[in-house]
Every structure is written in structure tokens, then in C-alpha cells.
Image (cartoon, rainbow, N blue to C red; front, side, top):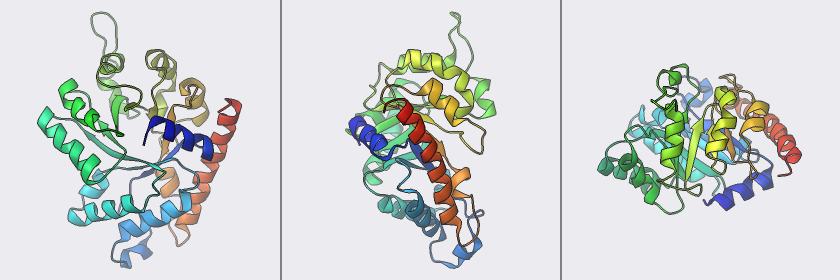
Length: 272
């Protein structure tokens, strides 16, 4: 999916919501466990209930690969079921030496046909550029994450007083463009969004942490939105586990719609 196509979907749906499919066999409603593929059935019903309110889905790969072959099969079926006009992100946080990264890229972009994959930039350019060589695909670099431990390294300053996440933002711009590269910035780091936008005014930001992790949607939009919106705000647990009975999908749809309605107001006020 191109940048223009993603922006079109945001404007058409009046939403910049990404639904995280962090599907845990231990948390899905128990009545689904009787089925042949409970993970896919859960995802299928979540997608049916939320597809009108979101512009992206983000399966967290760990939840699928932890289940072995059956988990990968569930993931493949989920991807095939997602409507083609919805952006898909493999939340895999890969990143290794060049030839290994090339294999990871092939796995997610060729074999599974995701639109995007999250990548850790710690090993530098040769670990990232293999992902950027696929036309129409996106690499989403970890920049400033929402977890508590993210501050262990990401805000370290060099001899010039520049923080590590700022160096990631600046240096990586020589690897790709705002047409094939995004950045992860946690919703709990809203105080940094203005300075991040000064460094990367035109790139999309994938913003996890709204909902269960305590991030504030209005604050994220206030400091992180650009002229094209430039945001994909992810909510996972708050949506997909909002109910645990036979009506779990309906409740998930209600939660997704609530967020979409808030986003529609934000986009309208921004003239988008």
C-alpha cells in the first residue's frame, strides 16, 4: 500500500485506528476453544466487527509463532481474511545482519504479503536496508517505545547531547523515505512528539500504548499529527479483550467505534 492510498483510507473512514491482533489462546472466550482453529475464529469475528472503524491491523507475531505450525497457519488465514484496503503490519521487531534481514523481509513481504514490518535499528543500516528494497512495502523502525524499559537506552545522550532515539530518527532518514519508512513512538511519550515532528515532519508514526497502557489519544494527536494525519494509533487489549462471552466481537466493535468517533472529531478539527 502506498502512502497516498493509506492517507485516502484515513480520510475516507475518518479514522487512524490500528487494531492490534495480540491473540492469546489463554485470553480468548472459552467457547471458541471447542473449534478447530480458535485463534483464527477469534480474529475473524474481531475483524468482522472492527473493519469499518480501522485502517490497519497489527498482528503481534510472537502470539502466533509461540504456537508452532498451527499458529502460523492461523496467522496466514487471518491475513487472507483481512480486507485488501486495510493496512497490515507484522509486529515482529526483527533486525539482524544483512543476509538474515533479507530472509526476514522475504518471509513477511513475499511469503505472507504484509504491508509493513516492525524492525529494531540497533544493528544499523545493513540490518534495515534489506526491508526497504521491496516496492510498496514499509519498514517501521523502533524509535521511542512506550514500555518502561525503553528509557534504559533510548534517551542516552552522546557527547553532543543528542539522545539515542534522536540519532535513530536522523541517521535512518538516509536509508529510506517517508514513502517506505515509519517510526514507532509510544503513546506514553507524548511530551517528546513535538521534537520528534521537528526531525521527521512528514513520516508516519505508529503509536502503540493508547488504552490499556495509559496513552492519551488527544495528546498524541495534538503533538504528533501532521498535515496528512501521519498517525496510526494502535489499540490492542482495550478492543479485542473488551468482552469474553459470546458477544465478545460486538463489544470489540463498540470499543473500536468509540475510538473512531473520537478520531473523526480530531480529523475534522484538523481539516483532514
